[in-house]
Image (cartoon, each protein chain N blue to C red):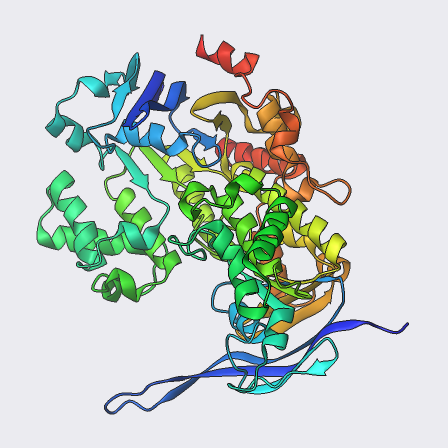
Length: 280
Length: 290
């Protein structure tokens, strides 16, 4: 089978220099310690781990926000030159990111129409009327309406704002979307709507997702492949079914054990255990 | 006699467009040694109703209730100072953001000893000893040293342990935990939930667990109240709620869980409310009110 690889990461590393002080030597923090993976076009890779494990640093490197200390980044068959000043707008358009907090990631003083029109104004020479049309089309695509064009971010709920953030990311027709905990700030019912929207958009535009999350039930639902990170290393990497049915690393097993179970059998077991404890 | 009994609680806030009803005729009952979970999305009024019990709402809020009994005593009739003696001692609360709910200007030791001084009137030596004992109880290593730490020097999980230590300092009869693990990692969430449940089992205090996470409900509660837009949708013991939910809203919430997905799209809550976006309280909830 010829694989159509969208994203390949080879032994990528990121170190941060912590400044020293008087009588205190400089320290190097290895945030990501050599991670490699390959991701096919149209598939979803979920990256799981707790805070501080380097999953967001990895996301920042894939989206060129941060420069890797070493290692290669190959997107759509081309090796990316990530040195500052060598990034072209072409490369940047292929990869977009959606952040966790939809309240922090939209400028409160910018109307939604301008949020969506800005990427076009910077990267293309479309006329204002054409930009407006494209923005309105995108609003409808993510489940909002043309009447929302002239509103400000504070007039929207969390779920709607995340839809706007998704619309903004899609304006330049990216091929790869990095989603950094896109639903963890949302209510359960809104979370389901946004996850459905992401699945619809993936089908329509053949998008490739790198989905960062700490919620294993969401990961199980959305991912094709799963990578578990722990202290900057990928301790587990495989297809969803492999990882969920047979977790190998100790940390993955701890993670599975810690996830609350909402099925009737576990509730029954818990109540029985509690009754036994109080009778004793 | 129940530990806490609230009948027909309504909380309203004045807005520019008139009075907004955040809690609408909710009745809640907790017995001794019972774990009650209140579930709902943001805006369902689950936190506001408990803040009303604690008396922590701003003076602009209009709170009415037929009865608000704690151990048979009506809290509404208490004077300010009588109420302050009760709150923090017999009724204690843990909040969602552990780092934000501790005072950054004082050491955690000072903050826990403040509770012991005001409510129990212990002297300096006894306060110190009790604080160390409490820190050990909630699983903070190096308790003696930890007392001199400031909140910013601790992680989120450790801060939540400090909050729990402060809440249980005076052996409360009722503990209200408002989303105690929402801001924490899954592995830390497990540790904190285990700690709270262990303390509850050991001391036999009543526990109200406010959450939006069905997994947390399944792992902790004896009885569950489901709230939506300020109204009680359903009340049931935990097993019947998951096995045989009565109200449409509960059914919708359970169906929206990613682990219950059938096919390649999730069921959304709005799909359940087709043509009826504002679900009426179910028969079981109204029955419980009567």
